[in-house]
Image (cartoon, rainbow, N blue to C red; front, side, top):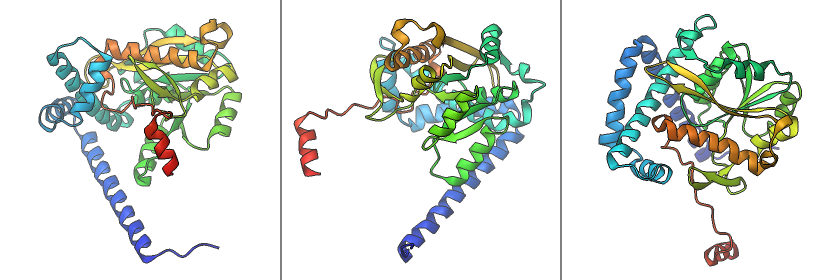
Length: 323
């Protein structure tokens, strides 16, 4: 028996639907405009908007500077400012590339946009009958990295958080699945993931997402960071080799190098990588190396580092008693 819905709740639901659909329409209009302009215009647009966000609006300036000074200590203020600008330009250009990709990149011309220096590693991994776990960070254009896998004939299963806006969620999911990816929700997909790994499929996952208090805490760029245990467990429990990968921008729009940060093969793991903590620390160090080498392509704007609460502190004890 369903409970009656109050008029106020019904009105709030209608307003939310209207707002969500309005945001969705705005995003679609922006995408349509971007899809009609040349890539060179996208490059100029990204540069202009990056200056506006970095120098005028100063959006999340304190967070970006905090992340940079902790992760890349010893640089000058001018260098931090330059990295912040390059990050904004990269993120805006990334959005333009996502809009342009379905129209421009196909299975017959992907070589015009992507180079793969280490093709031997890629062939070895994908010709192996075992499942594969691909781990990327918020670095380069990771969305187009997944898009490329589908074009190469290696469809992947990707775990992604369900967006609060259902219209936007459906739109972004359709893009991600256009070339053969399969998007699984972050919650409630454990059985599907186990089945995919059991039949030798490929999982692609972002390895530098905050996992909350219950995650495993490791060092990432000099500070404690919470990580999901599942990524390491996928490899250790299924025997799937783990490959740290990145779609790194090499020059202008839609020009990338597919870089491999390292491979962890369960059949040949050193002792220090045979635990969840050891393997989690390993792939985070590989992502950190990419961020240090090309800092303008890492997402310093996201809240990767959140403090771990002191559960034994007097203040925490008072909170627990009050609850």
